Image (tube, rainbow, N blue to C red; front, side):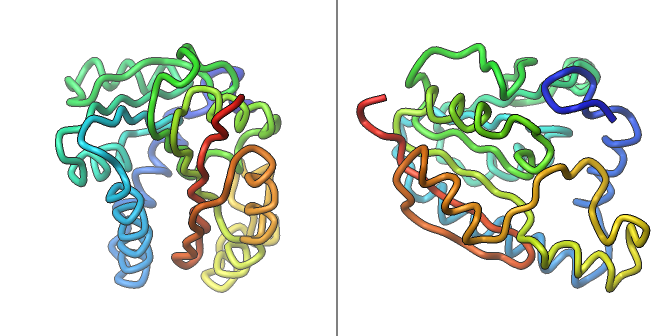
Length: 212
């Protein structure tokens, strides 16, 4: 798989993997994913009816559809770097406005959105500082980032006999942050407002600085 931000990061095999993760029938997995989205719901409740929202790195659009159900009429757009995913959106008539773009170079104006989501993406991005700079550039209020909580994520993979040869590291994960490490990183770009820890993820809500 190529590095995120170059091209075709979400190939057909990866798309199937992503869909499989969110459609997992295992009761424990479904419980964990439900906890994740309950935390996202808490974030959405901070938003005003007139806020503009963007999800970057939306992948197959699973998280986008879940977020859309939580909204109360706010303007919502999504984007992803992968042209295959965008073509699929065009083919199926995806119900949310979408654009192909890289998190490393968002085709957006400064402060164009009030809230920007980046969910389960940053761990794939080698140049994660540039990605965060872009998120905070285009957001006027909030930036929401989620990543696996390490090393817990890899431990849980090992317990279910996944990716044994890679010590539990999920394919494509090039960055690994504990909750405290992710908070320290994002605190360099904006003010930390809230941290959630739905097992086995970390979700950080940060406020964009007024003077960028």
